[in-house]
Length: 491
Ligand SMILES: NC(=O)C1=CN([C@@H]2O[C@H](COP(=O)(O)OP(=O)(O)OC[C@H]3O[C@@H](n4cnc5c(N)ncnc54)[C@H](OP(=O)(O)O)[C@@H]3O)[C@@H](O)[C@H]2O)[C@H](O)CC1
Ligand SMILES: [K+]
Image 1 (cartoon, rainbow, N blue to C red):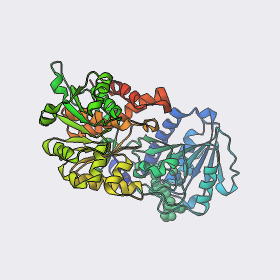
Image 2: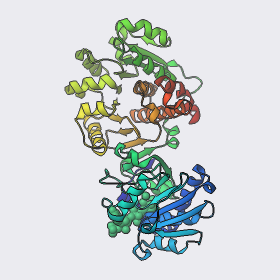
Image 3: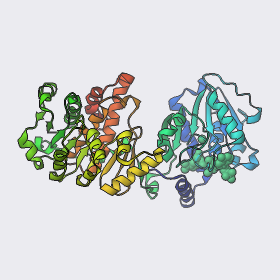
């Protein structure tokens, strides 16, 4: 799985790769620039656009110079905007500068008129991961000017101004697309930066996975290629029992819909048998809405160990008898999934956290998480608290949102690559609970269940989004779950 490295480790890796593989840093820059151009051709028709490349003094600027050369015969026109005399720029910047053909017009930023047409594309190659202080002076002036103007804006590696591992201080380039090399830089996951990054794309630069895997920073980027190996395989003789027997707790009066969504999602994720424990008055609705589900009676509640996994919380309400909740946690000795009111109740009575079975999966959104750990001042701090929480209680903590993170008890953090803004809709979280509980019930270990649940959930949201955009509702996500198995070729 692709590791997410700090800005310093990226530099270390580049240097080692260059030293050990006998390639020059210039070749590595050329490979990055070429792969950027492949991305560019896949997303734009070059002949329809004028290109304006703003190149800073370091290697990010060097990337920009190389890209200007590589695209100059394909686009309408290329202008390279420079900040410094080339003597003040990095070695690879200078070497690329010397290779510029006449087609590239070179202009100093202070002589530029900043007049763009709507179809013009601005490439931000001012600063990359080498940024070490807030931008000021001419850099800030240019960035602010560009932010105020209409054009298509693409940041190379990271929007200039944003540090690779920290929260932005001051101003940064506002991109429509960020094309980042090898893996997303940590700070691209911060919601504080969403307005600067636009859509994030990851482009390979030709460093093989075998080399990359030597560098680990306890942070990983979960992609489609990682998913098949995480799945269990079933065979022709597999029976209902093999697909797991799960029980979902939730659905207080007026909130049975949450249970309808969770249980349907669990069934669509492959659960063999789904029981629900809901308010008596809601039984009829539940059984009409999802005839495949069984409503649990006193017998089932007594014999909890007969179940493979439990999912606790969707629509449960906060009036639940806490001794009942505690008794579930104490009597069940396998990992459970806890969401929504299941979490809110734990926040109300934190002493109960000690009863949560080890290896359980907690799935808060930002507000639910802060009810558990208190307010935070940045997403970076939130991620740190998630990591600490997972370690302290021996649980997997899924922090939901864009780039949902999964913090593990042993200090690792995974960031999901699927999903979209259309999933921010009522019941989306209930669907995730059902999916993860279903995977646990099928015998996946908690890490596999969490990673597969989050990835398939996001992918189902993407598939639903393609058809319905902002009209997506949670039921649409459920309807797309089966297609995620087809997309990923999971039997
Ligand atoms: N493996 C890869 O991903 C590769 C990435 N490449 C690209 O290289 C950049 C990183 O290049 P680097 O030269 O290390 O850094 P930058 O280009 O981001 O900028 C560094 C220079 O900028 C100066 N600096 C830093 N902050 C500021 C500021 N706020 N204001 C003004 N100047 C600033 C710094 O010099 P100082 O001495 O002044 O500190 C540097 O001169 C990476 O992002 C990729 O785009 C390679 O192309 C190939 C491999
Ligand atoms: K940049």
